[in-house]
Length: 105
Image (cartoon, rainbow, N blue to C red; front, side, top):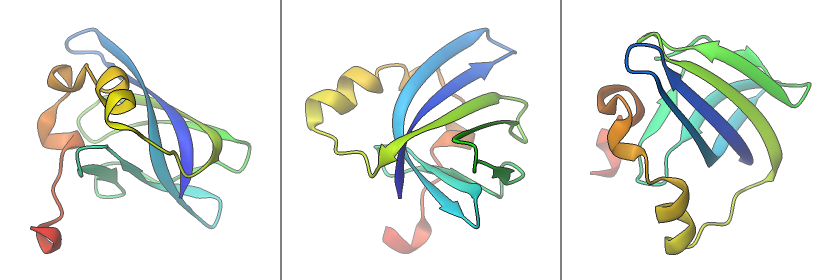
């Protein structure tokens, strides 16, 4: 798990947001972005991108654009940092970014 800055752009609404989130990388490819609320964005929503340079960009299956830049190892969040960093959650396409893992429910 790595900590990364994730910049999100929805061209349909013009929404631009930036988040600090945990991501998963396998074989130098970005495979999952984890949202602090327990949801995630994974390869079922985007084509895995090479992030070996420290950053990558992709467009999701919903047409939203993402720029991901690795900051370091696993992010350490507090309740306050989540609320400050994730205040734009209601502006995102909930169907895409908040997929819930059925096994954990």
